Image (cartoon, helix red, strand yellow):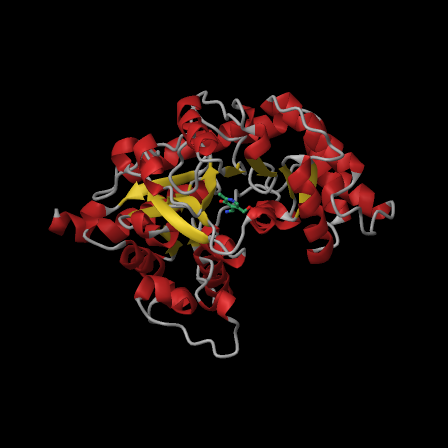
Length: 418
Ligand code: PMP
């Protein structure tokens, strides 16, 4: 049947397999961009399912549950009431007011909804808008390595250059001040951060953020912060917005969304909170790129953000924490694998170095032999090699069955090697 995971990587072979892509008809801007590994694996999984295979999908970054009913109802009601037209480029007043209410209520950030908030088609688009808004060609962006698969392509689409700074296990997957200082050049313009972090599960503490803020202030850098998982932090940890730190509000572009925490991946809805001066440019860009974000998605999301998360949502997040605990302890018990419960977000970042496989080999083996889809760590950057990313918030039955299949795939081979 050939190599499943390698198959999806063929379009992005340059980075992972050392082959050059030939795209004669394509422009140079996207010639060196890698395909999204996570979206690619999800497509492969759909294809396998269509062929009748029972695939356990731990690759996609989404929970098992659908969007909470009260949020979906608000969007349906908006649609049926005729809310089917374009909105202002920056989003409806109702949505932006709800974002401002949420920022004040949950993040201690006072935002002017009229000038400092813009509705986006999810956090990916928020990131692209932010990068397009502030980068000049050749500007450098400091990114975590490993990081979310779309950061390097988004930076490069916006004309910037990525400088990867490793997140080392011995530093609990956090940057040190020295690492950051050593990475600054006269082209550095932005520090791009993500907390809770995908894929390592790190939640930035105030001390972590103070280091980043100090470097940003000292070298006059902007910070773009991806806070898409901000409401799901575990063991009592609190998410802190870097924009609340002294002197940071004016140099921070905060990107938030509902895709993960409210299971709204298909709605394509998120928002940016940034200084008005930047926002003016972003609104211009948005008007040309999209006209606006979907009207009815904004209506549903406004409902979700205008009030504190309901009991059913909080219960869902507690259940996700329990599943993260269940999954990581189950994975840890499998020969050759080692991981800890994430500090936040919903991925297990599994050290596979004792198995003797590369991350691509093992991801391939699991999909081919056991029909379990996971993401090879190398998809998140060179420093992700030696790990797999596994989604912990699928249905309990799937988690159990998936653990069983991974154990089956590894026990014999690894025991022979250990
Ligand atoms: N940022 C991170 C860290 C993510 O993991 C993801 C999705 N996997 C996104 C952004 C994309 O978010 P959205 O679906 O809202 O565009």
